[in-house]
Image: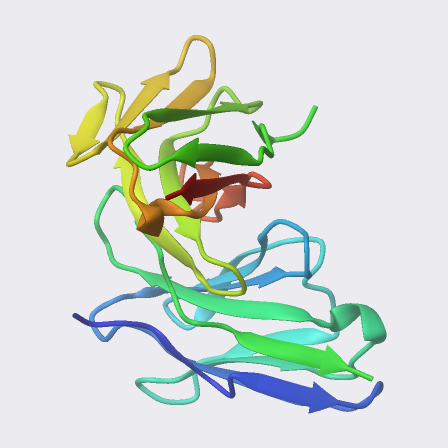
Length: 114
Length: 111
């Protein structure tokens, strides 16, 4: 069964450093997403991406964040200058063109900012 | 009012019990509805989409009441492996695809 993959599974970084989280969406999907979940809190939407551009973003997704699809398979989230409050689980998801818009999530990257 | 509201639980039920979870949402224009399950420190996994006519998948039944803005999930003959957090998820109307998650209801099925 096709699945979304993410690397790394755990990333530790110092405050102020840049991090890039990587995702490989399901191969025939066209919509890609990033969500985050701070420990003990609910899953929150960050950004959606379609046809090589951002289609929606939340208030969380400020100028510190950027997304890119550098090639035909990878989808990345970059945090330019990490803050302590960026520590969270970051989930990538993808969906196809089906009208029910079902999204499938990757296993996540746990980001710890020290 | 929270966009998606769920009873946080925890629900502790014996194996074989029937358990029901409820969820309300605030945006009356919401288009699509889902139940996901999330195991501790894992990703949300799609359990089922929720349709206006109601739908069933094995031991799981989901219902949607658009007039009351209410979604439910019923689990029959619960198994130990059903222990997880159940997330009510709503998607707005139109072309927006972002998912809005509830905080989840924690279920523990006891032997």
